[in-house]
Length: 293
Ligand SMILES: Nc1ncnc2c1ncn2[C@@H]1O[C@H](COP(=O)(O)OP(=O)(O)OP(=O)(O)O)[C@@H](O)[C@H]1O
Image (tube, rainbow, N blue to C red; front, side):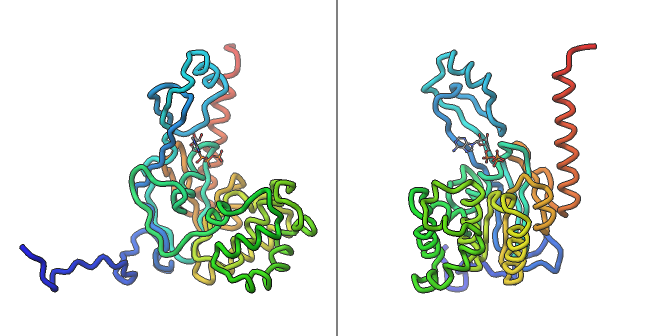
């Protein structure tokens, strides 16, 4: 049967039509939808045909694979395994989880920097930071990188020049701005990335660890900056190992474990459950390591 004008399908993303089943009624409309996202990496020089789920291979395993002559073979690391959530305008969402649980992979896929193996990401607007990270160059000075990052975010050359002092002050890097970024400490580089990324009041800002690296004054300034972005109806994602930072900055927390979402809720509740889980795991490991009575 031929389609008539009346049959035309409407694929437009109509905010008013969206049911708000994933959050309290006072939240803004959805800004980013992650639907059954799967991310895998192909690793060369590892065990042939193996599939690894989260966690970094131990030194022992890597040596064993090497001795078994598996160099040149490939295996698949399943970093994100079926994550689904809806983020809203005005939310600051922390992502916690142990090393290798898939936090950065989730963020990179949500930012469109790596393709999902399965599932989809729908965004209302281009996410920033990871986008900025991708264009920054370690061999260039902070000054050059501020210009490159600012242009990547859509500012004009004049606008970047006008905001230059503000960015340098925010990052608190002083005259280091005239030196190549490769000479910066990791904290300085992280602060500069955050200062550049947040300068344009982005709709979706993704931050990987940067905020745990500054002093009390920087932490205060970055909290204020996040509040400002939220007030302008932006959405912030913050990956951090510092539960204190996540509790202080975020309105909601996602907990990832071995690539799966195990909790999504109030910062206090989720970080406390995560803290207890980490402690229980540590005790289990210690018991295993202890010689039998
Ligand atoms: N480029 C890559 N190639 C192969 N494997 C990767 C790559 N990036 C990440 N992984 C693997 O994917 C899994 C998830 O890593 P990811 O960096 O997303 O976790 P994370 O929670 O951010 O870890 P961390 O807290 O240590 O930074 C890990 O097993 C990691 O070794």
